[in-house]
Image 1 (tube, rainbow, N blue to C red):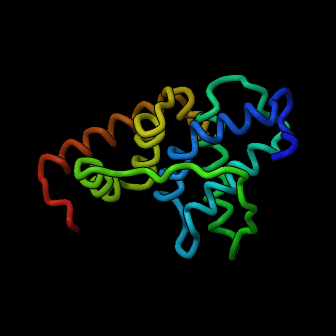
Image 2: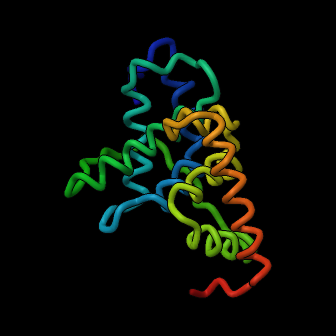
Length: 165
């Protein structure tokens, strides 16, 4: 990354943000990648768009902006046959999941897409309700309602304990 396209964002700061947020963006892409698309490629495309963006100027938390970009990348991927990707200049360590996370992922997979996405953004990415609403393009009230419905459904699924199918 020799030069950042983002206004007011130095190449070093862009790299720092990418390193801090890569795991969360990759997790989002794993959950939302269309069939036939590699989530790592979609995460990489998210960061390429971030670096090339003219609209990000360190207003708000970078993860909220990146999640909105990741959502667009996943939607765009569903419309395209394949994406062209470019290697990042650095590597980020792979994430490791424990049994509790695997069980939660199984419960999340059983939620309707709109509820799953809302709760993942809120708790998986740590976004505020207003940020979730902006990422999803809905009102704060709708975002709060989706999050609460998702939590209730997750609680039921986790209490049942039968998450294999």
